[in-house]
Length: 288
Image (cartoon, rainbow, N blue to C red):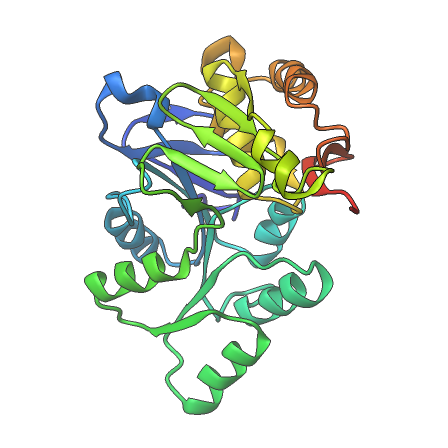
């Protein structure tokens, strides 16, 4: 934990960054790079020992869908609040007692002022029934009392993360309404469920399949999984797996531009990909 309260991203291998150390917890077959998926978890706690224990517990993926976990830690609530204005996370773990902005007040801001539904687990030494009830009323999805049991905590976090996609019987295919994602071939197919002309016309419609690059496919999948939500640039850069010189906003913008054109995400197919100033991008459903 940084002594000045700034945040750091914790992984197995450490790299120097302006914000702190980046340590990724991952073990995966490099031949399966098309299927590597990242989970980002924000942890708010001012106890370095507690942080170390949490990161160690979360190194292994929470479920079989993810192969890599990044834990971003914060010692102060205000720092996490600033990050949430521009960053996107899959899960949040919040401590209650902090020197500036406590976890429950941050939770209230997240739910009421930001309308953010990111899964939140409160992790606190407060044990009274009234405290647990207050946290849940404020919008916590679960509450775990310190000291926690590692296996139980992992199970609760795994349960909290609900996948927005419907997985077909074929393990590498995902479906979002009229859109079908083939992770094995990095293709996206569009087959409108209710084309003009009724049942007969619907039977004649052939899916329109688009071949994407690996990075484009990962970006498209991240956007569809976060339908309706503003997704930060840093989140998309990480989800796309950019490395080295490619890990820049300019590269992301270029790929987003191509993706918007390839998938016609301009409203004609029911979705529009918008730029969100100061944040990143948002995929929105258009009115039918």
